[in-house]
Length: 57
Image 1 (cartoon, rainbow, N blue to C red):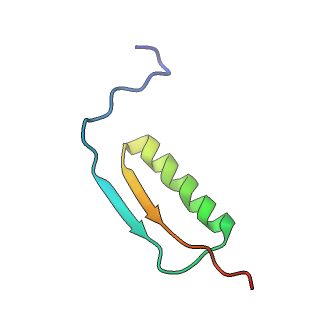
Image 2 (image 1 turned 135 degrees about the horizontal axis):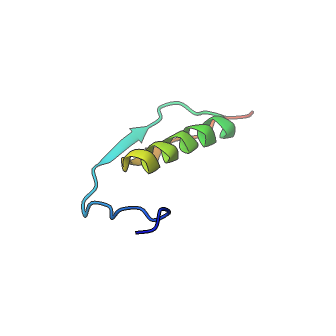
């Protein structure tokens, strides 16, 4: 295996459902998504995040 290759993932994943009750700015949502992506890459955790954007009116 090359150093850049990852070991195979398990055949089943346990997903964590994350539901955001309040809206956030686009930048905040993107920062949270980036942190979750890093965590998923490091730990093989899986997430489904449902969120909304804050009103800018």
